[in-house]
Image (cartoon, rainbow, N blue to C red; front, side):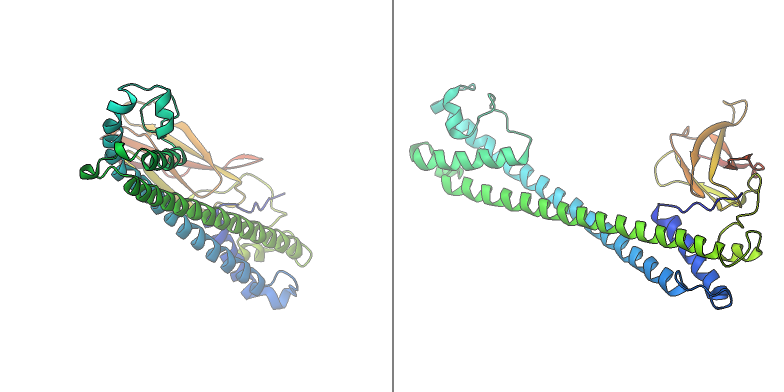
Length: 306
């Protein structure tokens, strides 16, 4: 019996939902679909589109907040190191116990990599300079007031990064919940359609599904294309979903190096990215659809210069 797997990746799942909605638009009334209607599928699909958009947006904000915090640390590092050198005549050229009072508590005079540890160093250093004003150097701006300002700036950047990370995590959870909802909707649609039309009814194809009664190896690969990938020495492959396929084998042959095609990867969607190809080389690509009955026919062979 043919299987109709529902994808968990956003792109393929949205395409499945769009196809299912198109089938419902054609046959919902005549079949008497009552629960998993076109309207319900489109509502769940729209919810995933919105959730994915929000996730991508918050991910961008998170990356920006991280860069901001890193920039703040880079900008203040020379000032802190200058202040450290100004303290050496008072606390010693190498680390020793007295340095703990000035914030260097990790048995080294290097600055900590962790931003929270650096913030604690600045807080302790500001308190130290407040108590040891004779160790301040106003001409070089090494004062308790300046160190406090740096501490405030760093705390703000850390807080912004944490806020952005939390928003992105919440957005991811909402996106994942929307995926589960739409996956459940399409699975329930398959169950409902199974009760409304025969397993060999050709109308299953209108919903983007294979008639459940169909048995056998998957069909041929159609609309197979290849083009240069986003990353260096990579190629992106795309093709149309094959009937009865549950996965796809991607075969690669490097011209002049490989005597035959080699299995490069197995994917569950109708696209793949092949990485780490030889720069300046010529490569051939071939796809075969796969299910529990075996592999389908080989696709046409595409050849591309990397």
